[in-house]
Image 1: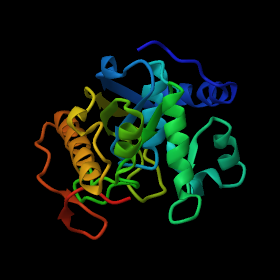
Image 2: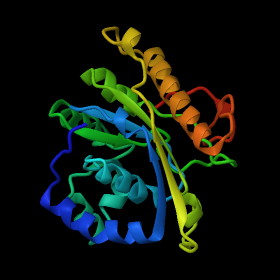
Image 3: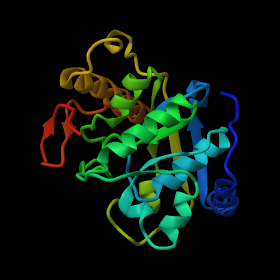
Image 4: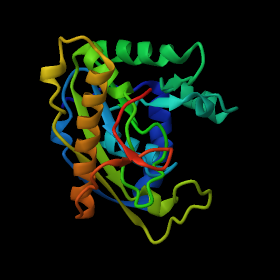
Length: 240
């Protein structure tokens, strides 16, 4: 993948945060050769409030300006949220009249040749063993609407610095941040067909399977069959 230009605002954030992450973390990053040129969706698991920063570190060091579909509550936060907005992150307003705006913005970004990072789980995993939960269909929707590659990635290690749903970091000793990027998910048989709920669910299932397999490679464990849902049971992928 050819390195991509960063906005001035993003360069400022990178200049401040990257040296800190270099000092505080060790890095085991593999699969960057699977990041394509042109527009694409990068779908990853979510294990910590800190992993958007550590995953962004991986992206920046591999020439990819991180652009997330992010919860509007984060981007609407006073001062910090407004600063983050200047880096062209895309707010997601769930269950509102503006909910479709994020999809439209993501599609536009990809069609313009950009890359958009989406966490299909929609929130930090609540699986007891931190495996990916069932996925929502946003990443598949964007990939099928644009015809772009949908690239799976797994990350592991940020939860050791800041455990899920906690506020107290444990920065020392330095933790290793693992990232694995896989080849694009095969969606060829689903492209050019009506984008039904069944098609979206199948595309999402393949995406989450790929992410789970990559995480299994990092952890040296087989990914579980079935996935945890917010309702506390294992089920198929799908839904908004």
